[in-house]
Length: 168
Image (cartoon, rainbow, N blue to C red; front, side):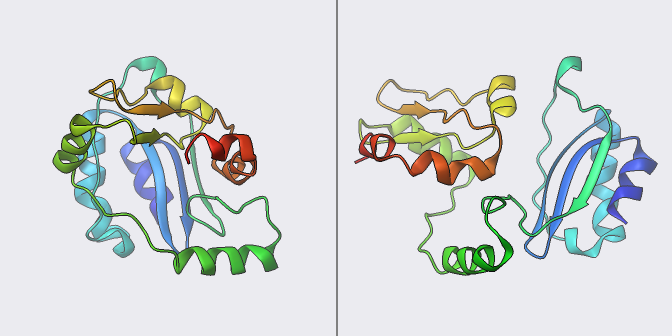
């Protein structure tokens, strides 16, 4: 059980679990975080092959407590929609053409190349964007923070034509 793995290692944070997969952030000692990466795939088979990321954080940036919960969606984009419409929205989104996956090196190269038509849209919630933000390496990249309280607020943000006009 994912919750037990975290408890055994003294990790705190938040992990959403859905049929789509997992989404979460944990904090603890560096050794405990490395142990989670090494042990969790064997204890929670769905985590096999996961691309974990480690990054240092300051004391004020660590989590207090552990929350692991099941939800309809891993990221909660359609959480404000009733169950019937959510299933349709999730299915339709799954059929949508997606952007190209970039490695970290490719990501930084793309940002460095910049261009006035490039927008870095930071869809993290208000808390996450205040803890740290992406700094575009060149002046031609526009950084946008929608200042949403949670991910499910993004559809409402984009419902505004004035907002959409900025990106056309």
